[in-house]
View 1 (tube, rainbow, N blue to C red):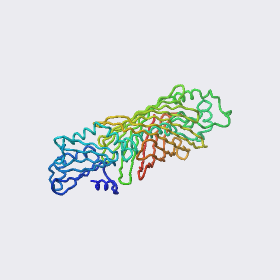
View 2 (cartoon, rainbow, N blue to C red):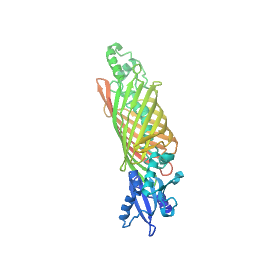
View 3 (cartoon, rainbow, N blue to C red):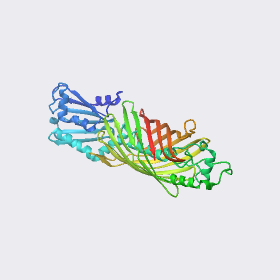
View 4 (cartoon, helix red, strand yellow):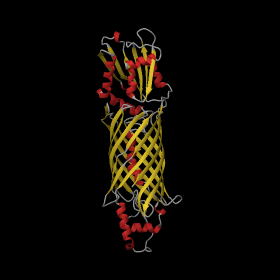
Length: 479
């Protein structure tokens, strides 16, 4: 048993499945033999211990399984070694005994005094599903540190990482999106907007003359050569009504994640449908209340994981250059395939600061957030892993002139750095670079909607050989 476990941990094996189970069967007379199984469904792998499945697996090797053999099983549970052993029941005063152990956690539990091994096995499964003694919670917390594909926390595809990414995106990336340098717009149009009380706005799909503008630009010179403002009163009134309108947003995000601990490597595919609705304050259109409801699914090998979240964010301008966005959210994740279920409470504060660099703009984003797991139940699985982390993200976004492409296009270039502190995770830092291309739709001289596509690459790393590569594609439409 020890030799088998050592081989599984130390050998350069690249697994193709989240779960692998190797069982050494020793008859009361005769030589030992091994049966094994691998797959993406936890309960199906556990069920290899059912006598009918052991009998079928033994028959494939030309052996006969009688039911009185000594069984020593080693389960690789998404990177965490677990042992499940049946004793020699004839030599035990308590009859049948099934022992479950996670050596790394120092946890062990025996199931005994049952008439049959099947009854022992069913008692074990109920013990796991009820999370007695917080066994599952402790396992989940260990998985966040050891597993490259844990749905709850610890890697770029997890619920925790996705929640932190959305918060920073809402308070910085999306807020500064559609930003260009003011000098890309005609000089006299800029001055007229400023005299009407608009200056340059750092708001997505805000009022503009053919182009969105940044709120930090300062107009120099005078406008004494311009016609009277009264000639444009109706036009400015129409712009004010438009810039104060509420907005809805829908999109599609795709991510391809390859994660490895140096021994095994897994590929995951994640799809997210990000839905949001923005309420604009009548007395100050720069103040916004944003409601988000992202729905997602992640597939790892043949295992499916569902994500659902709800959050509320409030964007408040501190100055013309600087805005703050606090956000609160609640997320849930569940996967019966991976035997995972948990919720997450999140609170974050994001700062967005913008600078004008001639025909370019530079936007600086900073976020601090708190993310803690909560108890949640999916199917038969329920637990609270007790994972809590503080997340710090810093980013830069450059928005350049559009004149080389078209008057209604916008180009953005960004780089982000994210760091995790608190409970140990599989990866605790990530760096991302990307580019966005947006197309704006207008009616007359007012922006009514925009569509934006994005491409980014991220590299995450942790202790030892823990690492993950992420390629993201996104499409967003706001109207």
